[in-house]
Image (cartoon, rainbow, N blue to C red; front, side, top):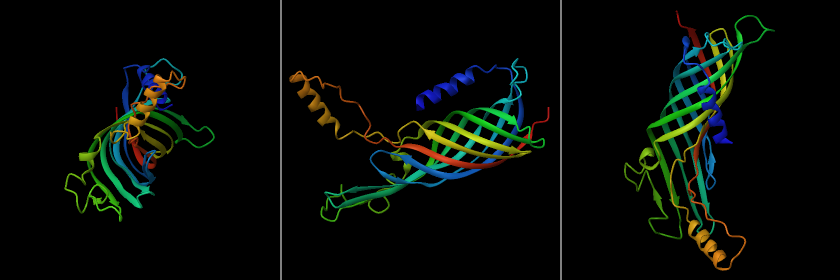
Length: 260
C-alpha cells in the first residue's frame, strides 16, 4: 500500500504541464506525535517538530476546468523525528530502553487540490495534498541503555551516555542519514492563515541488522528440501530492525501572494 501511494503521487506529478507560475509563498510551524514503527520494540512518541518555508505553483495555462484548483508545492523544512523505545528480555530479567531525537532537512514535493467553500464568505478554502519527501539527517542524539543484573557481560549492560563514546550517542553514527517518505494531509485556509493536519511516513529502515532468526529459517528450509516437503518456502532476506520514521502533525502557517 505504501509503495502504491508513492507511485500514485509521482504519476500525478508527471501528468502536470511544465509551464507554471509562482502564485504564493509562506511558512508554517508544526507540532505533533513522532515515533518509530518497529515490530520488535515497544515504542512511545516524542514531540515532533517542523518549521519551514514553501512556494506554490499553479497551472493557469493548463486546459483543464480544475486548473485554478490544482497546485504544486515545494520548499524546505527542518524537522524533528524520533521515538522512545523499550525492550524487555523476560528470560534474562533484563530491560533495554532509550530514545532517538533526530533533526532532518526535508524537501517535499507536494501536489494539492484547493477548493473555495461556496457556503462561506470569500477567503475560506479546504485543500487535500500528498507527495514524496526526501530527508537528510543533520544531527541527533541516541540513548541506548540495557541493564541485566544477573549477567555482568558488557554486551548485556551498557549505556551510551555512560559507558559509550561520543559516536555511540550520536544518532547518525548509528542510523541511516537518508530517508524517503510520503506526506498525506488535509487543510483549511482562512484568508492568509493556513491550518494543516498531515501524516509524514518514512519508508527506509533506520538501521540494518542481521536477523538472528534467519539461520533457523534457512535450516528449516533445507530440511524441507531434503524431505521433499510441500511447505518449502525460501527464507526472506529481512532486516531485523524494521523501524521507520512516522509522524502525525498539526501545522499553522501564513501565506502571501507573490506580486506578478
